Image (cartoon, rainbow, N blue to C red; front, top):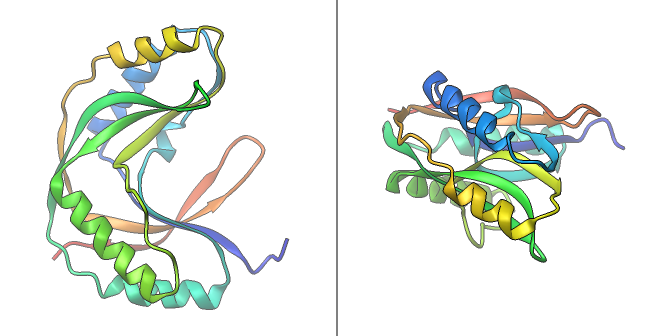
Amino acid sequence: MNKKLKRIFIAIDFPQEVTMEVARIQEVLGTRKFTGKMTELENLHLTLKFIGEVNEGKIEEIRAKLKEIIFSELDARLDGIGSFSFRGSPRVVWIKIGGKRIFELQKKVDEKMRECGFKTEERFMSHMTIARIKYVKDKQGFIDYVRGIKGKEIKFSVKEFKLKESELRTLGPVYRDVEIYSST
């Protein structure tokens, strides 16, 4: 692999209160038998836009475009728990992130990234991944169990978004902030 390429994405991180609630939900989820892995608490985020592997020059262009985004602090909340499946098998357990203005911010990010030559998102799903599932014996039972988990509706403010680098390692990804973009 070309060492000059970096895997990047644009995301929102969560406050400690949200992280603690996710830890509680993961504990509840962990009582159900499945093969897979919980998302590390330090890696929780809401992806506004996944870019992929790009070179340093492109990263500088992306950084400059993201600086053009003007947004004010916005309200968000944990909204519900569910799963994404592939061919009937659950693959991802997620928590929905509510808040109309998150979609507005994502559209601004998408527009700036389109100006950098990236495709716009076909369908933005405002969620955080809390577990990745490789195998579960009772597929429908697991899906129903996940739907039945009750999370606290925690409200929080979003004051910034980040350009992040993702380094894939054997034990899981390691994320590093490249640049932070604050609200006005």
